[in-house]
Amino acid sequence: MTVKERPRVLHVTNWYPNADNPAEGIFVEEQVRLFSQATDTRLICVQVRDGSHLLRIEQEERDTGERILFVRTRISIWRIREWIGTLALVWVLISERVWRYDLLHVHIAYPLLAQYGIWGRFLRVPLLISEHWSAYHRHFQRPQGDPKLDRIRRIFRRPIHVAVVSKALERDIRNFSGSSSFHSHVLSNVMDMDTFAQVVPRQSDPEAPLALFMINIWRKIKNPFPLFEALAAWKAEGGRFTLRLGGYGPLVEDMKAAIAALGLNDEVVFLGRLKKVEIAQELGRADFYLYSSNYETFSVACAQALIAGVPLMGPPLDAVGEYAGEHEKLEVAENSALIWQAALRRASHTVFDRPAIAMRMQARFAHAQILDDYMRVVAAARAQGFVA
Image (cartoon, rainbow, N blue to C red; front, side, top):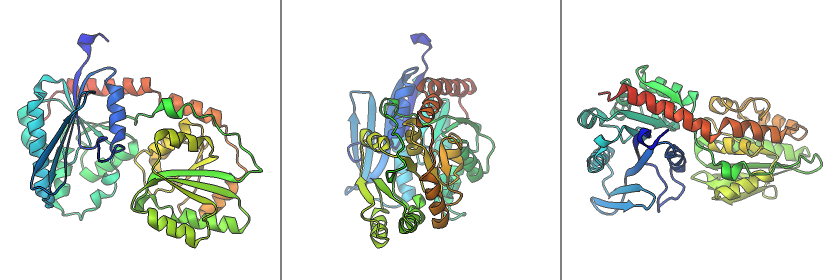
């Protein structure tokens, strides 16, 4: 591809690493960084955040080309905040002269595109949406008659192009929106090969305690409590293990209390926030990566583990099953203590070919393949042109 053929793409997101949270939306940053290898790329982040002022705008222009705009407000009424975000977005798009671009690529449709039906027809740029969000599966945890849901559904009731990280997420969006109008494409999350493909797979030792690792932003949907009960029961029957838990979130204090009540303080270690290199180090010493979620749209953590050659253990989730089969995971038939306990027994004498797992997954998530897939999606969105 020559320089003249490189499409000009303006990426817009409201999740992106920032001073408040360097890990926020890192999956968007990784995608955009890869996509910029084949496109002329500009990224803007527009977000409405809590603040002490009625309205205060904070802008940052980074040397790497990103433009970050936060509107801080003490207004709590979500409908007003939605309009504040829309006005900030339109102002930024006009100031960036969005009509010069071949494509507007929006990462996470809501709330950025809540009023797209009004402003989109004036700016008239071909649109591509990338979606990662599990909120569609839970209907944003809102009652069915909530007008907020109608504003989100309208986004997908037009023949736009939508890139999703899994077929499971595509089904969620179609079920949520009740629409078959949009064109969907599965486009994987971008994985950090420089970090996770360098992990040396651990050699299994049947005489050693089973080494287990998990990491998450711990929310209710991650549901680790049946696993904790299973570990306590397995310990009582002689099971030997260590569980190292990384991450943070609103569930952590309840998790610590449960571990203490179950008598697992000697076996379970809470690690807190971990950098990627620290996650890779933990994977290098783990026999299994565990996941206990009730639902996932992709699971970056599971993919990272497989790239490092670490087999998975967890319940049958459709999104994880799109890239991990019987040769990559020990499936827990359901997320219950009794079934987890039986799986842990099996795990203690089950050996996976870890180098083979790493090889398959590194090919599955190869950057060159993801970039080729992306350019096909860009071509399709550009060929269709602007959709009102």
